Length: 222
Image 1 (tube, rainbow, N blue to C red):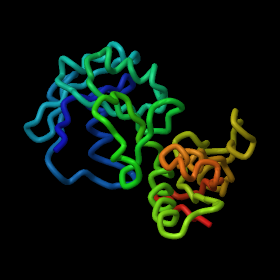
Image 2 (tube, helix red, strand yellow):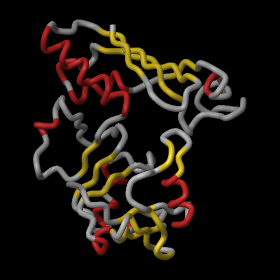
Image 3 (cartoon, rainbow, N blue to C red):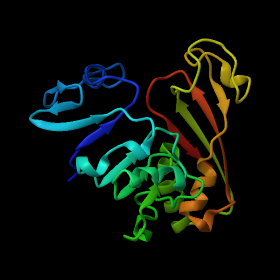
């Protein structure tokens, strides 16, 4: 069981946080236990108090004082080991990065989680696409063997895309309005599979299409 004890968000207040949690455009209204504000630094999930911090620097987040043993680093900013280690300086014991990492060990459940050892303090849980592709690739490779493969992911639009046409620092196509275009894009999921399944390293390549839907993605492996 997981007990939520603290949340850090330097950009919004607790009342705004509660509003966004309770009413979601994609997933609808939260209809389980009540969520409300106790004060500027505390949320109530039912009767359970959850501390709220607003620190930009992860070293300053008092995870230890809040009793947080495990921290999920989901900003997309602190994805390498050195940056993610700042949470440990704040009192956390373990950090799970919810994105691919260039140097943190990467684990995908159903693929290589048995390789985890308790001395590892910072891990990456890879990307959503890698979590879809890696189990599929493992099953096929274990049963038949993979010589070479091409992955295509049809991916719902994300917050990094433009709502209307505008300049993109990554590539011209990426600047097109997300809700009106099917946009070819790159993906690191195929390379990431090689990290969680070394036997497939270099055997898979991939590409992505960002499509005008708000939820659900699919992976096709050939």
